[in-house]
Length: 405
Image (cartoon, rainbow, N blue to C red; front, side):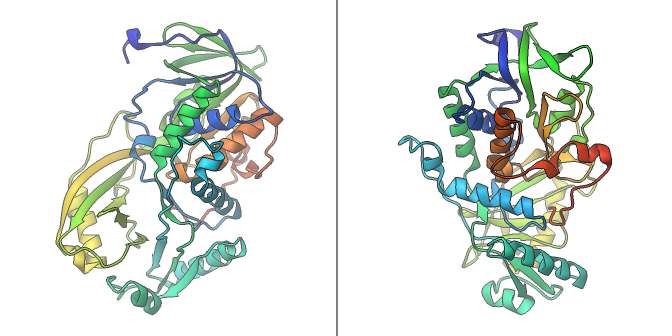
């Protein structure tokens, strides 16, 4: 970003300054601007208006209810409701398209009894909350999806209701557009420092790259994988770092005769139907933090890891052609791989919406709503998200979620 591209905000004081304007910054901006009980000013500061290297731009837009923790399940249930009723949530604006949730489900495969037991325990929790998850034996899976090789599989969990993938980028585009129409101001700039009050309990202003000093009532950290760079400006360490994740799009010489659920192989590789093609993904074997600007692909991962695994699991995938691939970044919470949201314990007007570790798109409606409630009312109202508070990190108490991909 050149200095000539930097934009100066219209005001020198805002009630809310959101650092980062991608999926989460725009979710918070939209829910806040759409809240009739909030009439304050909103500034969204985004360093790259093309969003080319954001996690938002590299999303696979997946959605699942197959979590083990109740609040994560409820978060995804609201996301499904939001996507299926997108135009109504957007005020029945005729310009807003209907979004389709492709509900072909996730298929978690277990190759050992301990994990099969965990899946069955999670299924009971999901079912008690109305989710359609079913535990299937290997024979059940083979009956419904005969293309799998299941010689090493004991069973699996599958859900065909409100679980699959959706057009997340359209959701993001309309949040951003509508937030601006409702008064949220977006500027191309970068927050480079913050000034706190004398006792360190509040951020009083942010300084932008072009030297503008903006007074603020609340600061929201929506900086994705760069979350710690933003929090350090307020003297706060957050255990979030960029981790590289690979996505591969391929064509099959012999396409499957039915949709492929998002299948989580015991190896950690996942794959699913993607329109007329198929999508696969995985973390690298050496899963370490990477530079914020490192999106270089390791092409050996496809040849040496992903293709052999998916061809073993689905023999029809022995004859496939790679058509596209990319590397993106997870905003990876090294503490427990779950979200960190809400106010800091000491710097009371510094709010997190960080560390989603790959769950970001499906959790963005509930989290954006929650942060808007926290700003407007000082509390969560629709869904209690306090389990994701920063204070759990200070206490060393990990959020317990067994279904991490």
